[in-house]
Amino acid sequence: MKEMYCTEDKKDCINKKEVNNFIAETSNNISKRHNSERVAIVLDAETLKTTTTLEKHGFDSFNILIPNPYIYKKIAKKHLFTYNCTLNTLLNKHIYTKVDVAFFDYCCTFSGNIEVNPKKDILVYFKKKLPDKNSLFAVTFSKRDSKIKEPMNKARKYIMKTAKQYGYKSQLIYKKEYADHGAMFVLVYKIY
Image (tube, rainbow, N blue to C red; front, side, top):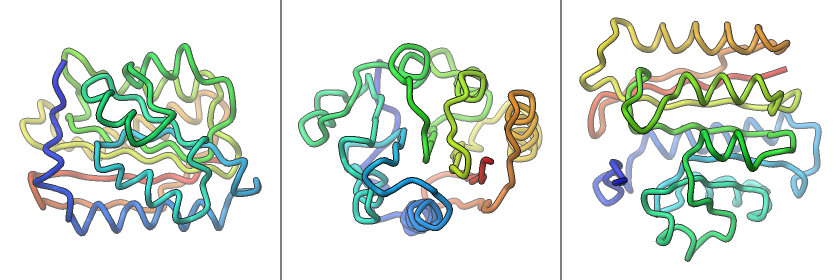
């Protein structure tokens, strides 16, 4: 398996920084749990931009879980709770606690690819009742080579439908399309 995200090209991405700060600050405002108790699942690169932002906003590094089989060794040298598995495996086999922030920062399209299936990941996350009440759920997808029309609208509807199907309410509180290094979009939901 190969890491698809070119960290060096995107390390100074203004949009990524803006999204990370929004997620961390909003989590601080809505979470009912103490900072040291909050749990996050993050698809992060070796620069650990999202993880670092969460830590600066009070998250305990022991409660930030990063699945990444592509560059596991590089990330594990910097962050103890890195898992040598896909997000789907982490969700299915390693998570048994409520999650305050889930940032599925995919490098692929909403349709996924041979190794990553975002729809399955999202389904498992809600089906296993992992979101805490007053938590955040965020996704980033590439629009490059998307095989579906209106991928942002399709992703938005799928997330809301899946959350509702498993007893959650979801409110879209942030969305953005940007093209720093390829066409991308991000959606952030409050889950309650």
